[in-house]
Length: 305
Image (cartoon, rainbow, N blue to C red; front, side, top):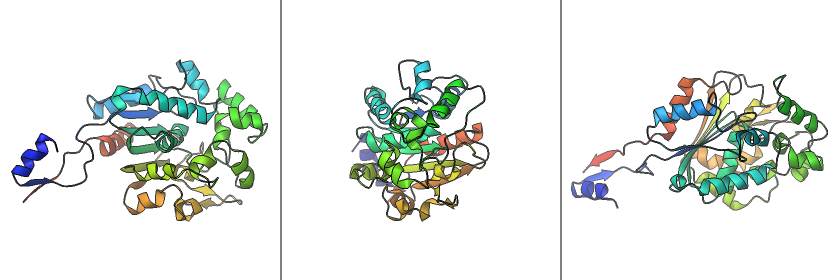
């Protein structure tokens, strides 16, 4: 018990349960496809908004690779499992993060952030917020801007067969591709998503335990998202073999609670949010509101006896 709590106890005042930490936690952010850790127009601007809302808070932006160029390339090409191991090691080496973090991921970075919660056991995550993340995978490889050479090259390579031995190990987007008409092949050959989503049915129990240990999971979906197909994947929904959308509560994964989502939901710790806009069209107002609501340290409630 700290000295503040001792004084309150002597005065007959009790702290009402609900505040886990007595200090502001640092924030870790993970960018999406085609972006980098440190672009001043994107993640740099997001870091500044977080700094405005949470003064003196340590903010770390995930980088995969030794340079920004390597980081952007790693968003298209590489093995996601290897990348996650590397990011976990990097985060655990940062002294400021050892007391716990709040975690925010954007687009595919949100999917990877959630996988980090499950796999990086020594990283203590209090709240996870994801924006437009393909948690249930995608049934179509994401589209690209016309002049984005690297992204279009990724699509050409992926078109050779997302479950072929080379593509499945080297194209990032293929590692969360899920064809609703080829589910057996997806489970057998996809090297990443079936493991973290429990589709392989031999998921380590610890994955679920780490999700359930979160204080809050917030999943943001964009109202006009055409990049993530189906858009409901941002809420752990998907589509059936006929293309009909399946909500998260109608999935076997939720009903049998493979990941702990139902437990989070029934305890009031899962929040599904829809914001207006296309994929990654995040308003400054929505971002500030999300940071303030879910990451800001709240003063404990006092109850005088």
